[in-house]
Amino acid sequence: MQIFFLVIMAALIMTIGLMLQRLFQGPTIFDRMNGLGVITADTILLIVLFGFLDKQPGMYVDLAMAYAMMGCLGSVVLAKYLGGKKL
Image (cartoon, rainbow, N blue to C red):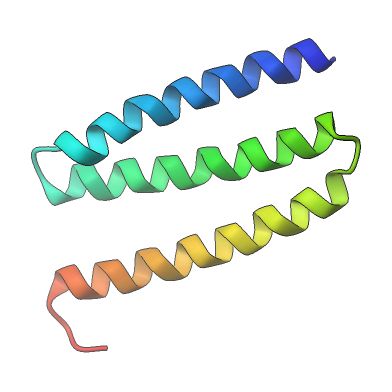
């Protein structure tokens, strides 16, 4: 089962690498926002998978939830900033 988790983690890291390219070289701001969202989601999955490998999933799920809340809040603030509205 650990090999399965390691393969999934390697695939997620490759996806994050591709999305970093999209984040820095995206032709439009929408491509960059999409890349940032995918990186956030993949990082959350990596944290949870690492928790299962470490045999302490409860602690890592809590960390992943905190990271998800910060990512959601950051996306809303960035969208408001790019939309030109005052906070």
